[in-house]
Length: 87
Image 1 (tube, rainbow, N blue to C red):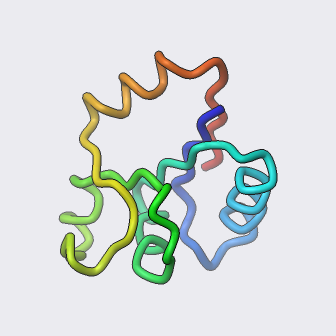
Image 2 (cartoon, helix red, strand yellow; image 1 turned 60 degrees about the vertical axis):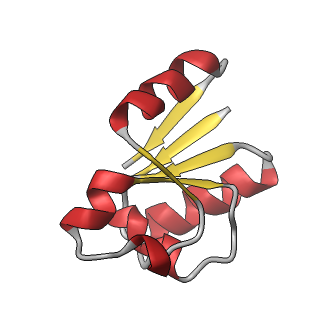
Image 3 (spheres, one colour; image 1 turned 120 degrees about the vertical axis):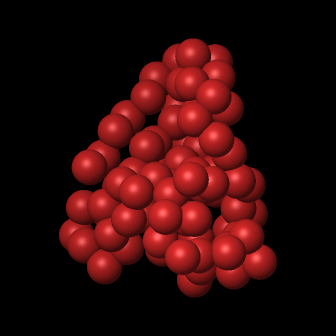
């Protein structure tokens, strides 16, 4: 299962989605404002959208997780059995 999370890390939606994904041992991809969470995490299992960190002035050295582009995201979504979007 793959969770796509775009909400800012300080929102209820983000916290609910992230905690649920972790309890389910699901993969997590952070996009849009959710990429800010990759700066405060030591979780290297996150996928983080490279375009979204650049648009927000975040450098690769500031994040944990695996940087991916939109082509890789499409690959992940087609390879998994379920995709859950939390916006």
